Length: 317
Image (cartoon, rainbow, N blue to C red):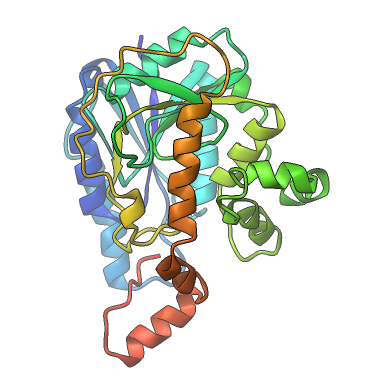
């Protein structure tokens, strides 16, 4: 029986619809159980924002997107990070394995096949802790393979209950535990300084996120992450509507995501050739001059400038 899916949604009905339509196209969709966790409305939101929350729930209940669909509607808002952690924990702990997607992760039609093949293949290889459907849009890579690297990518992932038990969201623990050398490697060998910075921002109360802590949990247990050589998902939320991701041409997948993965690694070790390509892409993204200028200004400052210029400001976050 295919692994169940935990899907997290809130207030983006059109993104949710596109994600569910893509999921419905999957070859294993009719045999898969889908749990959709709808976060509750935030206190004090406008009528227009509440309408988006309710419209998103209506989309989830429109039709039978997978073999079995459960829509769980929370009364109170707990935030994206808690929604992911609680929703995914509930499903993976019940079934022993699970797949997670968010409302802006459109999947290729072989995504579920790949996830289930990998879950079966590496179930007893405890070093393999994370299966990702995403890969950065790196030029000239094979479309039918997968490889191991040490970095968690959260846009469409799967794992097992016995690996998920190591998940620990405790920013101070990692700040106290990580040595400078560990931080360097955690920051993708220095190419992405914001990785550990996210943990520090969580500790300071500036952010409330999920992925960095799952990555830190895998990292501290020397876990391996499986990824396809070509992405099987497309993030359709890189349009300024997301909570933590803005517009990014470096993470925009333009190639087809309908890639069938047939070649899986047999050696449980990092594929250094592919990992070097990942690191170069991340370095280009994070140290591009325009990106560095963008990072100098917080989102609140950018929004104030937009209002002064009469530009539209996203109010849905």
